[in-house]
Length: 473
Image (cartoon, rainbow, N blue to C red; front, top):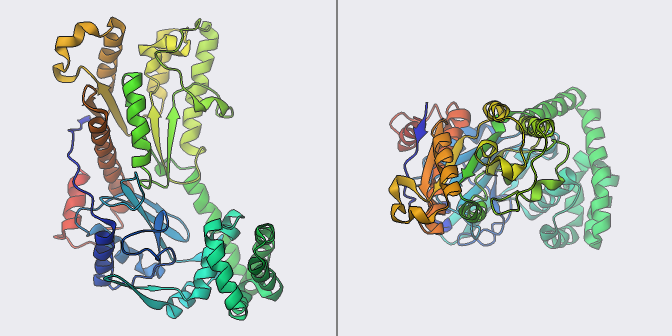
């Protein structure tokens, strides 16, 4: 089915403080007690982190999703589910400058390869109330918060986040014995004492050097005291990671076409706006090459670049065949998380402007490659002549540019989902329309592919359910 998107109007963002109040109220109405894991010091006006981390009981996840989905003016544009956390990406509020989205992480396991380094039920039972403005929520006790803030990056990534070290150091120094006691069941006395003393000393090299020893200690003690459960947990962890990293379900793609100067300006403005609309947002250029040779991706040829001598027919066909292989491999291999890819031009350029890519092969082969290539979920064409715009100045537009625009227009209309934007409008206006089209597409993909079954128990007459159903049509 082909869908030509209209240009949607973007509503005003909800202030972050108002969103927090609405979220906490929705969570409480679902029977979920909000427990913020860290970075709550600036609430309700500011968010010290790039996202908001909640700690929940795993059984509460369906209610959490219903609560988030029920907030008026907020749309879920992305959803990730790992062994220990669900990431929810929202549009309609934000806390980072330049971005128009917000990431919420709901963790139910503080673990490494599904082996807990701090039991969730212990943290939730010991949590203490905190008030910030008109907000009332719970936070972990200082020792639990310090351990979680340190180990989330140290044991998983191998490096402690610098921004957390001063506060963690202060807590460990003031509550050394309590901290060692909290770590003891999972890591043993030796590894726990070494880690705590390294943090108290403030030596970053020693702190990061503890990552291997605490991983080994956690794994050995888990296998010793819970052998069957630990082996199953580790195997399940790797199977889930394989599903995320090698499945096209965790990939969304948008392609932007049009005159180079307008397309580049719009894409430059879009990238920060799309931050936190997916776990990773990356920009890719159309540059035929091998999957294993990525160093040349930092630049892309432009229409204004000097025209180089076309390659020979065999060399050209080899080049685009390698590009096709590269694109398909990237559907399954070239990512670690759920990813939104923004393409700055795409395969159709081989037919419209083959000289730019020094393509000297037969056109039938380029058409075949275009048909075999993985298709983006949304095509955006920036057209300065759309609906007769600039008709009075059409004679001023170079004939080659007009030819390319007409070919691009015909091409995008053959695709399943596209939008054509008037590139003669101000850049900010074009960017806002492109952003709205991308957000609409992400919302529909997220609901149909990831959330429909999870939200199926939402009340039939609930506004959130009705809105989701409308957006999925």
